[in-house]
Structure formats: structure tokens, C-alpha cells
Length: 139
Image 1 (cartoon, rainbow, N blue to C red):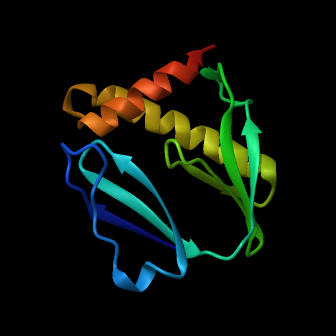
Image 2 (image 1 turned 90 degrees about the horizontal axis):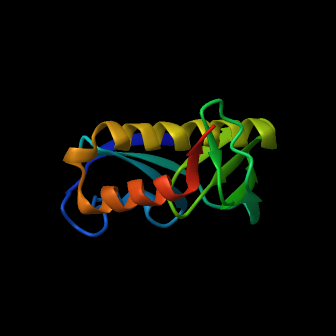
């Protein structure tokens, strides 16, 4: 598994970045966009079958979910990967609970990062923040 940080072009409806050609056919690509115009891309072999899971227990000290999020669950190479297609956030762990806990932490981190930089966000990231505000509620 490889994690790469690339610059992105902001101001477009969807983030735009160039994926190295060597990674386009045999790897699953998941990414997290940062408000400082970079993107963290995770490359991993794309071979594990995918299950879908309705995730509704954020297990976070500051926030709850007011509606479930559909997560993809994959078992691969001795770990479990959970990810969503709505926010492009992922979590991994040796167990499903560990992967859910990491996902929860990453989702809240993403929300807090967007909130801190709200006045500097591209339209796409503003839409992401609005979606997060609609499902995350303070405890």
C-alpha cells in the first residue's frame, strides 16, 4: 500500500488531479482532500470483494450520526478496509471495530479541517462540508 500527496486544482465542481499511469488499472484509489489544495491518495491492490454496510455508530466523544452512512467493507492482506463513496474517507484495522473507529476519527478530522478553513474552500469542499453538517450532530 502506498500513500501519495499530490497538488489539486480547486474551483471546479470535482477535484482534479493526475494519477500516475502505473496505478490506474490494478489499484483501487481512495483519497482525502485537504483544504490546503493537496490530496492524500492511497493506492492498494484492487482484488478484494466488497461488502456494503450501513454504518450508524460513530463512536466518537464529540459527535453522533443522525443518519447512517453506507460503507464499503473489504477484507484484504490481513486487514479490513472500510470506505465511503460520499466523502472518500477510509479506515483500516485488524478487526472491523478497529476499522470503524479509524473511519470515525478520519471523518470527524475531515469535518473539523473543513470547518477551520471554511472561508478558503473550493465549491466542491463547501458541498462536502454542507453534507457533513447535515449528518454530524454534537453530543
